Image (cartoon, rainbow over all chains, first blue to last red; front, side, top):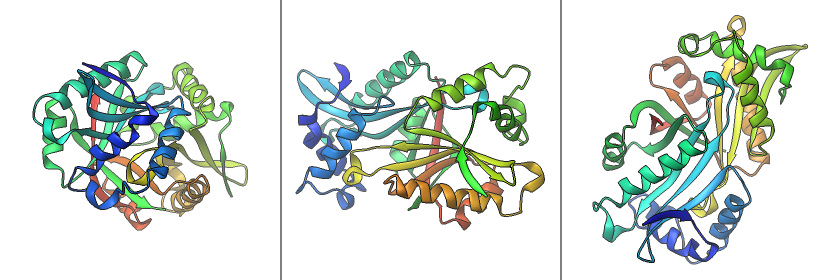
Length: 147
Length: 147
């Protein structure tokens, strides 16, 4: 059981996990992997970003992206942010997500982060309960705009 | 009128704007600038992060931090994120914040970002109206945990 950096040849498996989701179905398209590989390459080239996968017995069961964000406010608070947290459909509810999140929280602490933050669509009530069980609080509005 | 990269000798002015705020008062301390300067240096060393100030007639009237976040999901969606958006107390309500946000949205588009996102404390109702007027929607929960 380990949270480790994803390899480029695992991008298809990551996108498959992103698709297998109420919101993911409408916004992903596996017919052309090119934009996903470009996204992976941009993450791999950026020391502030890491794409992780959760592996058990040689099988990939989950994924998430970690972003470390330096800052001036709150006495130079360094933030960890996670995005694209997913567990393989067949393994949801088995504790994989919890173990994966605890692992990335430990990594973030090691990298000097003081808090972890994320946004989750307001329709994802199960996700909110999941994060609350890990200690997260819904203290903020997550606001977005298309550019 | 310009949104430009902040200089290191402007960190005190930035922190003064961060302090002049209901939430900022309790979590900043100007007695020792060291952690703020360390935060500035970490931003300056990170090509994904930029600390901006809004300058008019040689005076700094606002500040914000931009983070560009690559990603795999949503066909390699590239996100822009802003943090620490503040307008000098004496100039609030004068349109500075709106011009500053429109400028950073243009910069984010030039840098290939598809969306802009931020989190704002649920108690900041004025801020939420301000961002909604710029097109942002409160579609997400912003969740945080101390590490």
